[in-house]
Image (cartoon, rainbow, N blue to C red; front, side, top):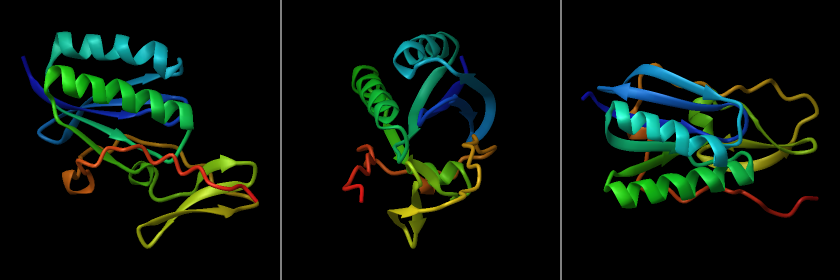
Length: 152
């Protein structure tokens, strides 16, 4: 059984799951279904096929509910299966482009700080699975970045 690391980007639709062997992307799984419905099924198949060494995920910002579901699911898997969980922010997966918050407000990352900013016409910022993972970008601080603040 191949030893792999599994990366989850569940910040909205589609959900992206990347299977990495020696930090290189070897398989991609994509779903437009609800994370609460599909994550258990996807991970069940992964655990039947691979020996998972690390769990990684994008901990936000993004859809509040998607981040919450992904975190609870992956944190539970991490504890139950004794597999370490790592996280990094969503900007790692979209080339540091603005991420939709609400209305014309977008999350932006400036000098390592995430803020909200009003943007009239933001570029389309799709999330992508990197071909090669840079583990230095990930942390053991896996708490979700909900980033919910006052909307003015």
